[in-house]
Length: 207
Image 1 (cartoon, helix red, strand yellow):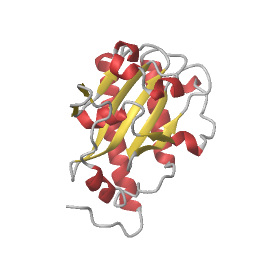
Image 2 (cartoon, one colour):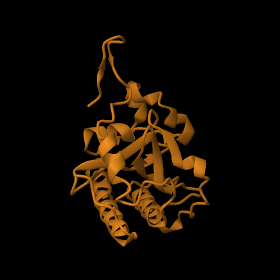
Image 3 (cartoon, helix red, strand yellow):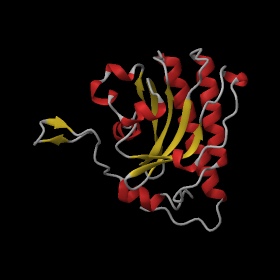
């Protein structure tokens, strides 16, 4: 949970990363230590964005990210950026995403809070939360709504990142939206395990 700053009398805006050492030892095992896109995770992010857009009838679509937490920053190993109108199959395919757009400081966005609380975080209207409405990601992504879920590596119980949706309009996620995200949480973890098993000479997972 967020820590308390005695000097300011407020909770810190960014929670301490207590799993950093364990996570950074695990990422090489999962073949996620390098900052490079993973095509299969891009495809998964695209599928989530399309299904979510159809579910909540959002013609503008959503940004969707598979976010791996690193040492002081976040890297979107999977990412989808909407470039057209229309949900589902009619949504335009993402153009090539510039590498710089796949990085975000740890003090921006809402994924660090999602991972810290270890459960889905739905923010139907980010402006309803003064603590987070001034977040840098609001301007960068035109964010008005957020739905994110933690990625907890099952065999080591280590939080490695998140999968999330960010949109530019207030969204009533409801149970169906949360259920959809949880479904993709599990798909993401399964895919990461499958990809790491295919990697040459996998390392031994930290104990």
